[in-house]
Image (cartoon, one colour):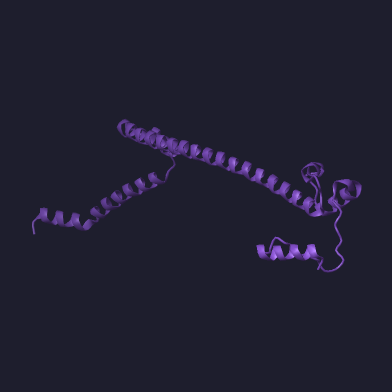
Length: 182
């Protein structure tokens, strides 16, 4: 073999190509670490680098990225404000329904107790009253004129015969019997 071929053969086997390969891999490692950096860290790195063209490109890229984040945060803030407004309206409706439900419960309890003017008496009942039946019983004892007395039944219920359910011929017969006294 000639001397040039020996040198070429020696360069190939010397491991110089192996030295170049890690440099290429280290370049990709730098890109990977650069992707993991925060925007502030990227800006610091760019300011320390010496190449002005790469700095301009990176600054433009970072400005676009920051603009994207700003618009996304504005959209999220608008959506959050709209959702909070809806939640506030729903909470108002829920509070109104709770108040009306409580007033209906009070009116029903007063009607059950036999109150004549339950709408007027309901205004006297405090909103934080926990035991409504006891309060109504006490109120009934103090203001018995606002409540009806329960009728007592002493056994079976007597239903008199009515002429409304009779046919015309049966009504005439009942009239004749009543006139004759039978």
